[in-house]
Each structure stands twice: as C-alpha cells, then as structure tokens.
Amino acid sequence: MAHYGYVRVSTKDQNPERQLLAMQAYQIRKKNIYMDKMSGQDFVRPQYRKLLKTLKKGDLVIIKSIDRLGRNYDEILEQWRVITKEIGAHIEVIDMPLLNTNSAHNDLTGVFIADLALQILAYVAETERAFIKQRQAEGIAAAKRKGIRFGCRKKELPKAFEEYYQMWVEGRISLRKAAEALKMNHTTFYRRCIEYQTKMEKNCSKM
Image (cartoon, rainbow, N blue to C red; front, side, top):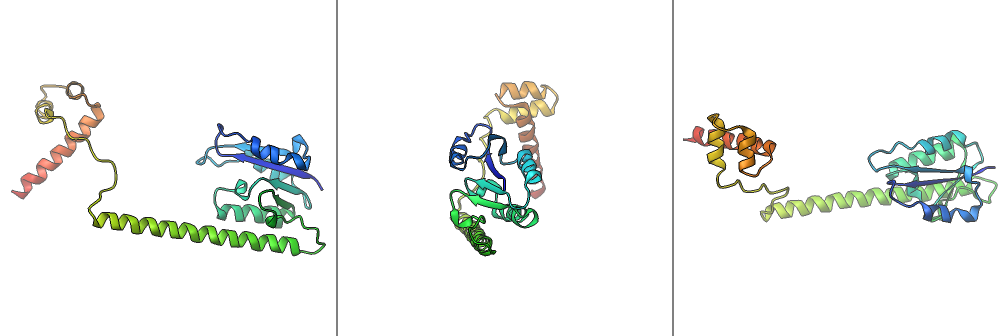
C-alpha cells in the first residue's frame, strides 16, 4: 500500500507549509506529495489529476482537512466517491480522524462510518448555506422596506455638465475635450450624456 499526500492552497501567495508540516509524521516520500496552487475561480488541478491517475486500490491519500478535496461539499462528495469507490483507495483526514476510511477493521465498518460522517457534514453545510441565504434575503427585504438602497451611488454631475453636454451635442466641442474640462473619464461622460438625454426625452413625453 503506497502513501500519498495532497496539498492545496487557494492562491500562489498562500503558504502550504502548515499542510506539509502536518504530513511529516506520516513519512511520505517527497515524490508522493502532490501540490496545487490556484485561484478560487480557476479550479483546474493538474497535480490532483496526476494523483488520481497514480492511485491504486488499497493506497492511502492523506490530506490536512476535508476541504482540500473541493470548493464545496458537492465537489468533496464526488471526489470522495471517486477515490474510495471507483479507485478503491483510502482517505485519511488529519484534522478529522472520524472521516478516515483506513480502518483497522477487516470489514467495511471504517468506510461505512466515514461515509456516514461525511454525508452528515455535507447535510449540515448545505443546511447552513440555505439558512445564510434566507437570512440575507430577509435582511435585504427589511432594509428595502426601510428605504435603504443597495448598490453604488452615482456621483453628482458636475455643475457645468449641461453646458458641456449641449456644446458636445451641437458639435462645438469633442467628447474627449468636454470630458477633460469636466475632469471626467470620456467613457463616463458619454454614458452620463446618454442617461441625461434619455431622462430629458422621458420628461418631454410626459408633458
């Protein structure tokens, strides 16, 4: 039975040392430790994929914590299934021994207990996410009833905006020159001009 370690950090700036130190007690060969560094958005894990191809039935994968397997519990459950069911390897979670499938029993007791514990954790995590979303929705609704507005507030238009807008419409000044005079970005000036024009048209249609 070969022993492997898997280390993952979310960004290239994060230090994997804590995970590596935790694995020293297991005396894993350096070549058997696979490590990925990636952002939260880009979750392509080349080293993890190499590990899966290397694993054989009866091998042991050691991780510091269960969230190293994925970004959420759906993904964790899927990777857990791949390793323990499809490949037939074992998983040992340093921070949570209850999840270890590398049981001393000769039957499936250890795997069953670990699977059950993981399912419970996944359920609790999913329920908590649902509660958080519900609380957020209730908080937003309550704030809206109080008249609280969300989103970025637009800056007030410069006092001379209408003057330069009219000059730009009449072709007496370029868009960039008008924006520079108002100390605005030219794309912002153009967008505010369109908004202003739309507002004026709506007001005229109401008269």
